Image 1 (cartoon, rainbow, N blue to C red):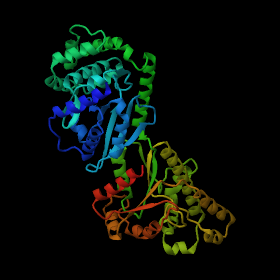
Image 2 (image 1 turned 180 degrees about the horizontal axis):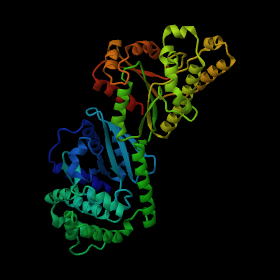
Image 3 (image 1 turned 180 degrees about the vertical axis):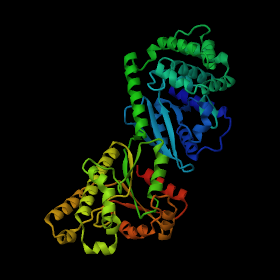
Length: 509
């Protein structure tokens, strides 16, 4: 039976080709070729009215795959550079997986949403398993070079999906927020389908199908004003399809309640719960001031964070902890009262040679070390859980560099105070055994470029070329022991730097 389906898939798809789209990423075409080469029985099974958007990477690629071809399907995914992903908060569905790959043309992630069984129905829970996989895969046509179900089978599944979205208040609200898209897709399917054939498929596939039911469902879904009719039809179908439920009524209600909570929490956190099966990573971006750390970090978050859990943290400016918060409140006043104790003053070579550090500066560096340590251990926990954590700067291994240990043995010996020496040693201890990054990207740019970038920034205090020059040596000397460093020159076009950083991070995941 599976071999017959596979042969029908290949022959049917080849016989009804309608042409290729010209704007889609080569990555998807490569995947389609790899699946064809391995004779994988599959199709893009729903929302084919928007297949062009799926092929261009704007929407998910929803593929239904014959379960016995799963091994070959995974091989094709991996060969084309896709990485498997999962929902960390339990928001996934059985028999459904996610895979992502970085498209070289758009420099954005392409999302393959693969189904080995049709789990559908309500938008959040997807309470039903429609045992119609072989109905969809048995007779295919080709649209834009991709196998899709014949329009009659897709129409039947579309009607079932929309009707079952009207069985609860939450689902009713969700499907009717933008309902104008539903009649448009229905009209598109009806234009392509032979409704006599579709009605026959409905009668064969839907348990206890009734005379005139097919036409009634179409009429209710086609008219956005027929909300009550859709609810009545949806509830009636849900009862007759109760044997197709993958979750009982109470389990479905509990799952819906939990998923609403997860959805709200995700919106409040402003990050995704999806992560790669291979795990997350801690990525350190280091380099001189105005070399592009913040800009490229934001680009990474934009290109990867729309699909995956991506976090950005600033090690140079860590958030306050309970220990440091009182001192942070006093910091603006201390800067006005003690202008000579600002960090910029201690970054000057002549000041550092003196080895004369005040109590205020030592305490501030100690608290900053504590805040950085807290943030880094939190970041490592997030990366272990699956997030991609991108750090702006990272504590180096040496002494005296920006963002790292400030007091060496010489400074401790010269301080002349037992208590100050103890604070200095504690600061050094806080930098010991910090979590190591998985990847270090050192950004490099000529001094003239960094000065021009700093001059163009909209900052409260305006450009500060002295700070750029003063910090350059301290930031360039930063080294992170035992971690390979990838150097990227950011003097070229921004998109080129974005591409290099994206490929470096994606390749390391």
